[in-house]
Amino acid sequence: MRIRQDEQRSRLRRYLLGVLPEAERAELADRYFHDEELFDQLLEVENELLDQYVRGQLSADDQRSFRAYLSILPGSESKLATAFALMEATADRKAATASLAAIGPTPINERVTARTAHNLLWKVFRSSISGDRTLRYATAAMLLVMVAALAYLSVTERRLRREVERLQVERGTIEQAQVGLAAKAQAAEQQQATQRDLIQGLEKELAQAKQLQEHQSGTGGGVLATLFLTPPLRSGGTPDSLVLLPATKTVLLAVPVDNKEQSRSYRAVLQTTAGGVILKSGGLHPHKSPRGASIALRLPVSVLKGDHFKLTIIGMPTEGVEIARDYYFALARK
Image (cartoon, rainbow, N blue to C red; front, side, top):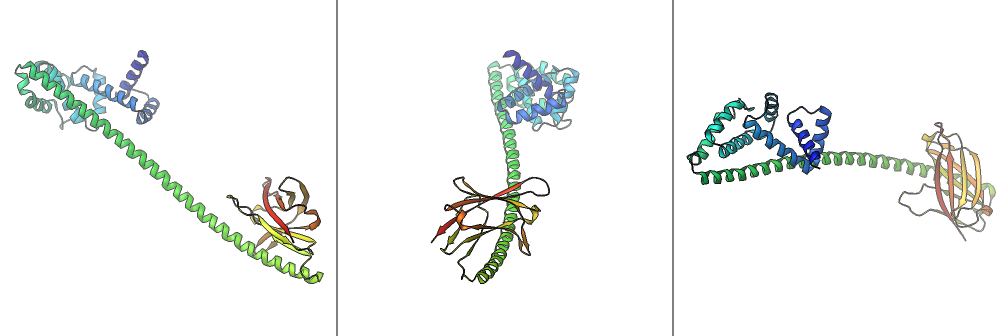
């Protein structure tokens, strides 16, 4: 377990120094963006490098790499000042001055220099450098508290930034979903309007055909009964129904079909909802009109045994993939 932790810290150190391969850098950045424990380890390694940097303990290459990292790190000025303060508080002034001279220019150039940090520290530690060891330790403890507070603020800032980015992504996803739903709702409304027009046209044509049939048969409307079938709703609903009079001998089932399917012929399978097959018929051709196309299926009442039925219409479009639709209806006899 210890070996794995050391490997992880070594990998984080190479990440901060910019020597990790690009693919591993991207993978690690994505991980610490979501992994709080890994993010805390990254901050620990960053603090260790910062301490070694101000003490001049890094190699020349590592010093240049870490300087480049600090140049793009938010709040690097305050972190450098804190690191200098800790070094002054835990070592004598002469050793700290030598370390400041050894590390060379800071990554922020003219904004934060070793001399600027030293002047700031001199005001804070003027009394502790005079030799009062108790006061020096108390000041060091105070600085440790300040460092912990700064680290907490830095972690909180990064977490808040990540949360804002996550919320922005979620907002974009929701907006895209809303646009997609609006487009689907508009398309559904247009399709419903087209179906209503088709139904009205077919009902009118069927009524005219029924009147003509009744006139020719001279039975006053008792021989032929027509039922216009509609596709079932996804959420369920009541099936189409037809009332049969005692004089009714034939039932005409009219089924609308979509012109876009471009099927030359259809097959029909009629069965009871219990699964009993009543009729199988093929070679059905749609009747086309200005309002749409429909299939007419004429059946004698004598074959319609039962009250609830399921009619399946199967078409073969030019693409070669069968399309089947189910229609449900019920019969009531007087």
